[in-house]
Image 1 (spheres, one colour):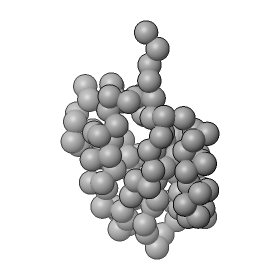
Image 2 (tube, rainbow, N blue to C red; image 1 turned 180 degrees about the vertical axis):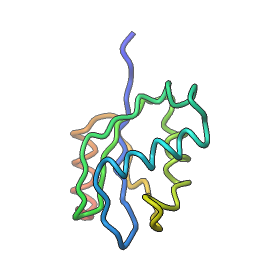
Image 3 (cartoon, helix red, strand yellow; image 1 turned 120 degrees about the vertical axis):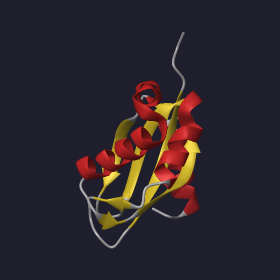
Image 4 (cartoon, rainbow, N blue to C red; image 1 turned 180 degrees about the horizontal axis):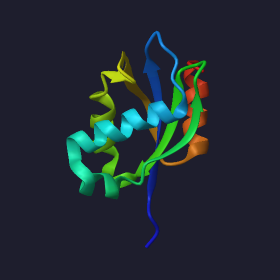
Length: 108
């Protein structure tokens, strides 16, 4: 059976800049803290796009774990011991549709 995926557009709200590794470490840490290793093994989390200047990221997850990822992302309060928050802007089933939604909203 084919694995269904969802793509999430995320906005990092912070005065600091972080590289992609620091950002993903924070996401993984938040997910592990909330759902443990078993939950993390089921999420299929992958970074698709990251822009440190615009503080924008796109991640891919399995469709059954989308709500858990949204909760984990919302629980992030700091990245690399610096205050930060991460907000989910849009969710889509395809990368193409997600980018179309983002461009249509005029945010990026």
